[in-house]
Image (cartoon, rainbow, N blue to C red; front, side, top):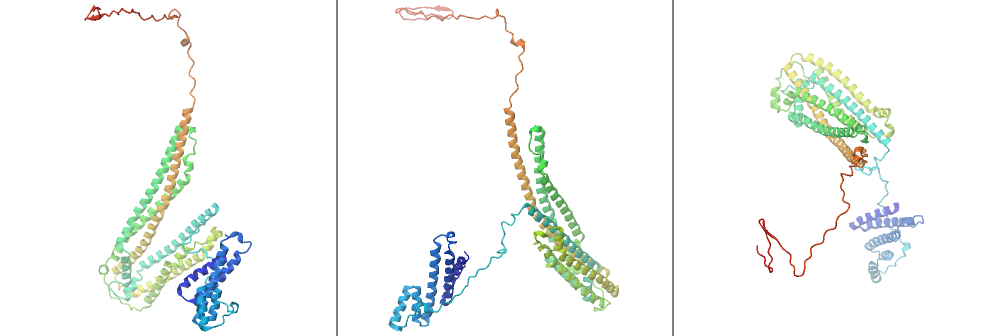
Length: 560
């Protein structure tokens, strides 16, 4: 099979090379293809393998071997013809048995060239060029490859993998929360110190510091306060949609249980099927789990709304135009400190380190590594192995947090020195406004990230709740079918039951009446015969008119 497939691959390459009209290239590819088919023919001709192939394969492979050998000889003859080597051309054509070209070349040789035609055995071997190579298939074969048998594993393995996924998700969530908590702490500390806006305001005395201008542009490019408010206001709708799906699921389970309890109370021991609470316990557990998840999500949405309300004014200012923002910031006062004082230089260097630390956490160094650290082998499912697998990443996170603590300590010291050198030259109202804007920007960034996570959470939760609802609906339908069948059997049993014997007849109902009171007729007289008339005799007809009888019979005439 291997040699045959390799020869077929070489043949497909020859078909492509044949379109290029290059005899030299076709010659090499065809010769190699002929040799490959020769190897395949040897393999197919083995006694141990003959039974595995249909008989037609041997002549097909043999014919292709000779065909490509002839094509190679023919292409070589074309090269000889270009070089005016007619004798060699004739030898190649004789070997290829291409009659038309052979006759033309033989005629030219007989009348013009008169060259000796060498024996085929004396000719040099044709050059070969192997283009097709055997390569072991990679696993997976492509990035879109999906093994349909990947989930065909024992139940114990599935449970272990599910347990591992749960533990891994808990570890990832914990580490991500750890990073974000420290980042928020750092942002809050910088906002309380009005950094780096205070440095920009001091070094570049402008109506609006450059850092505030950049933050404002970032907020406006993300949609500003309007887009953020619309997204947060949409979260209750997403929550309500999931709650309605879960409420419908609860209704189905409740109605099924009520129906089962009612019939069980009605038929007592005759209602022999299993009680609903025993069958629906896993479903109720799943429902309660999702109810707790939705309750937690609702509380988190409330926190987002409160946070937006707290920083709405600052985010609104950052969402306005540069002219409106500049007008809202109190004016500058003359600084009494030189721009290149040591505290300013130190703070600028520390702000660079802070930005590098933020960029490091936002890029693939931590979050991407946490999300992709899922290809752990099955023998690493235990908690100890899981901790060992995450140990290097946890170490890097701890180092990052230690660097943050060190940097923030130096920032506080440098800021205290900066405040002493700056003195009271800077307006308090302006600093408070800049602090508020910095805090608003940090809150906007955090709210935007939380909004994306919340929207994705609700959208991912909806299919899970629909799947649970479908499962409950199928269960209720099966229980209804079972109920109908059981009701039918009970009705047939009730109808088929034999009724009890009637009560004993009282004695007084069995007494007979006296014989003298019973008149019986033992003889019934026969019916009298009809009257007879003579041949001339006519029956006498009597007519009544009123109360007087009229009887006349005279010569067949009747008178009334």
